[in-house]
Image 1 (cartoon, rainbow over the protein chains, first blue to last red):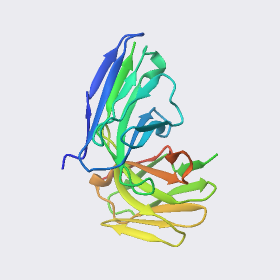
Image 2: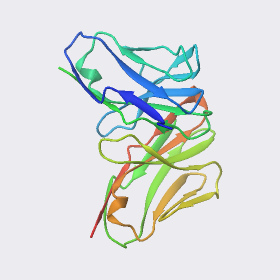
Image 3: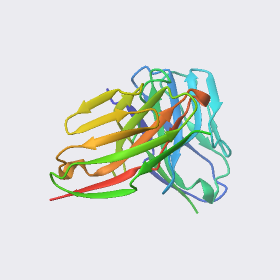
Length: 112
Length: 110
C-alpha cells in the first residue's frame, strides 16, 4: 500500500492564481481531511469528508474548496491565491473519526 | 473551545538520557488522544491512540500514558534517531476534527 499520496511536493504561485492540490489514499478509508501547518501553530483543519459526495468545513475553510467524487481522491482547490495561504498542506485519512489518521508527505506552497 | 498545550517546546537530551514530554488538554468529552512523530519536511507519523484515563501504550523506547487532564510520552534511553517533533492531538467528536498541540521538538545527541 502506498498509503496517502499528495502532489505536487512544492509549488510557487503568484497572487491571484489558482491551483489544485491532489490527494489519493489506497486504504479504503471513508474519512479524509485537509490540514495546513504554519510555523509555531498546530495543524489546522481546512475541510473534511466522511465519504464520497459528502464534504464539510473545518476551522479555516475560507479561500479553499474541496470535492469528493470517489473514496480514494480528495482534491483541495485554491482560488485566487493570497500570501496568507503560504503554508504546508497535509492530506490525511482514517477508517473512522475516532481512529488514527494517516498523513501524506505534504505540499509546500508559497504565494508571492 | 478545545485546547491542547505541549511542553516543553524544545528538549535536548544526551543519548541514553530518559525523559518525558507533556500534553495537557482542556476539552469537553475526550474521545481519543493521539501521539504523532513528525520528521522535518515530512507528514506526521502515527504513534499511539489512548482512549481512557489510566491507559498506557508502548512501542520500542516510547511509552504513552493518559490521565484525565494530561498525557505523557516517556522516552527511555533515547537514541539520535528518536530526534523529531512529537505532536499530541485530541478528538472530542465536535466537527470531526483533531485539535493539535504545537509540538515538542526533541533532539538527542551522542
